[in-house]
Length: 276
Image 1: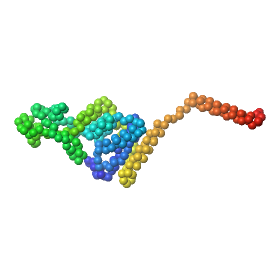
Image 2 (image 1 turned 90 degrees about the horizontal axis):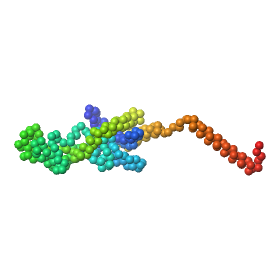
Image 3 (image 1 turned 60 degrees about the vertical axis):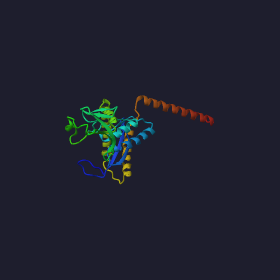
Image 4 (image 1 turned 120 degrees about the vertical axis):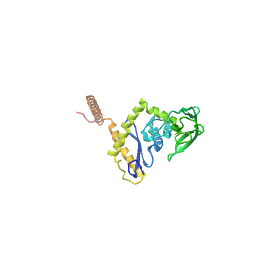
């Protein structure tokens, strides 16, 4: 069951595909249930695709995807797999509260008034079990603070919650905002999106007329095979007609006829026939 803001609920399948940026060849495609987000399928796709490319003797270095695949867990996972991610973060991501300074050595925050907000615990939040870190100061620390009302609002103590994968986020964001990251963004827009549009418009993936996810997966694989075959035919080298080629062909034919004539005459002599 897929649920999107402003749209009716429907029973849909989600098509996840990966494309080679060099020649726009589909390297992986699979049908998933549409009850989850894109970022929840990235790790499964990566493991399957990396194994397939390795078996074919191909090296995979960069993972380029849109914002839907972003999460701190995915950034950290790709780094463990030896891949550089170029995935823009969600607009809701914040590295930490404004005007608070993070002390990496002691793992705590320092507020604008110089008070320390120490680390308390690691916990999991929400239905997706997002891993987060909590920093919290005692309410007695903020009793006489001049900016207490603006900082705490209705709370009694200062509490800061950030993603557990903050450093992985920062490394990914640095790559995304670099010149290379902007180049990768253009590559993604001119590679994956046109391929997906072609599959929908011309390869029968606008609607799946089968029952069950296994049958839907077969339909997606057949569409990808048809697309890749068309790509392969375009890359098949064609013979170029030229004067040098024609002369070479004539020389080969003349040489072959001469050898056949010589062999025929030799057989006649052996059989004691008179040659005129």
